Amino acid sequence: MDGRENEDVGFQHGGEDDLHCPSLGMSTNPLPEKISGMIMSSVSMYKPSNGADPFFSSGWDPLASLSQNQNFGGSSSTVSHSEFANPPYPIALENQGTSSTGQLVRYPSNSSFVELVQKLPCFGSGSFSEMANSFGFPDCGQIANSGCPQNYASLKEGGTGITSTNGALSRDDPQISCEGAIGSSPNAKRRKRASDSKNSPITHQNAEGELQKSLSRESSDVLKEPDEKKPRIEHSKGSNLRGKQAGKQAKDTSSGDASRENYIHVRARRGQATNSHSLAERVRREKISERMRLLQELVPGCNKITGKAVMLDEIINYVQSLQQQVEFLSMKLATVNPELNIDIEQILSKEIIHSRGGAGAILGLAPAMNSSHHYPHGIFQGTFPSIPSTTPKYPLLPQTVLDNELQSLFQVGFNSCPAVDNLGSNGNLKPEFQ
Amino acid sequence: MISKGATWNSNSCRIKFARRFVSALLHMRNRNTRPGSLTIEGVRTHTQRIKIAAYLSMAQAVGSRRAWSRAVLSKHGSRARRHSRMGRSSVGLKKTRVIRSYPPGELGQAKKLRQLVPGGKTMDMCSLLEETAHYIKCLATQVKVMQTLADNFSK
Image 1 (tube, each protein chain N blue to C red):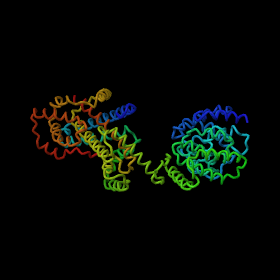
Image 2: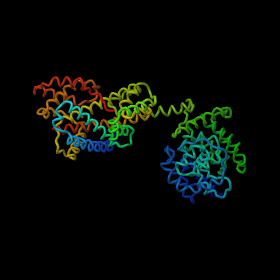
Image 3: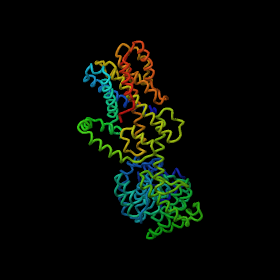
């Protein structure tokens, strides 16, 4: 087919070039360009909904027609979000481009499309329908549920990493039935998991085995399967893949289960426990450490602190000191002589300018306070001892104010000692407000 | 305050808080009688009211987006005040029930943090840290605004 030839030519350009959909002979379909853009964006994008909307809106009909093909058998495991954006489009692409094929979904030999096609069946029945519903595509869920190869959990988090296995795929028949998808899916999986050497061969084998069992009815394109098998075996990194199949399958499904629980899919890293509980724990711990880092930036003087316990202590001290400052300032505001003709705008502008200048230096406060109230000074004096008890490293500007005020107090001859004593006992600045 | 990107946000937060707080202060001053402010008890009461007004106006400026602001608003909103005046026992019982159900986060440090951050008693560790970060940011803004206000008033 001419289309296919074009696709082959376009396909052999290499990993990145695969995304140039127009070169694949699908020029009649406006979707490929969008899809390529989508693929690029979805690689880095964790939530396909961000960029997927234009795709979905445009490419929905092909998916609806795809559902009629019912090429997929079995049920698939979950797929990550990053892969979610991809599958509907390639399927749509395929339908439009390969309408000639009756049952089979023929994909251009673009490796990216192959990946995407493979990804489509990968959606777990549960998660995919969720995602599909969230995107407003109930049909997608049905398509996924109608039949998907089982072991596509390995496609998680792969992103659309189109690696050097393009060459392998180019040899394959662009026809992609379910078996074809299965055959190329291991390649795609391998591509995606370039960093994860262990999983790739095994998942390929798993996918191959399961898909073969479930899709034996797709016999027309079985020809290409051996070809696909060969590159798969050649590229596989382990020798005894079959032997590890069971173990890895459990790993994939368990990580699939964990990923199904978490909305953000996590892949079990090499050498780490893959229990669903431990995966969730790891996600939780990472979230907490991320928040701790944010807090570290907020709290002054905590750049060098490592360790959650010490950091928490610092945070607690800082919050307490801030609340004490609020209490002290509210007391000061309560005692200030109220000026009834306060202009809010003037104050706000002043406040903005002052606060930009730097946390309001209040050094010149004392003389102004001198002439008025004795009691406020007494109050300040009474509460003064409690203030330094807070963590001294936090800049407490009121301390300088109090020093000046104390000096002015002595000058004025303040003699409300009993009042001070009463206040001193009760003038605890612990934050009561919670 | 945190980073350059957050400056605009902190400014708007600061301005909102400043507006509300100043208007609350004015309202209180208009309501307050002059001689009452000279006694220590009067000053203390006034201080408490100003403190509550400060927290309330900050929570209102934040809105209901944050769990801690919602907790503050629910605790010190007008309805909460009425409830507390009418019967504290019922409110207290409710509170103790809520407290007991708080998720066991980390060790005792988290407990203290939960006490400090409003509404932190029923949060899990992850959201508690997030709320703490936002609360610290807003508290710092509040302190700065109040300092400049006090500065302006006394000059």
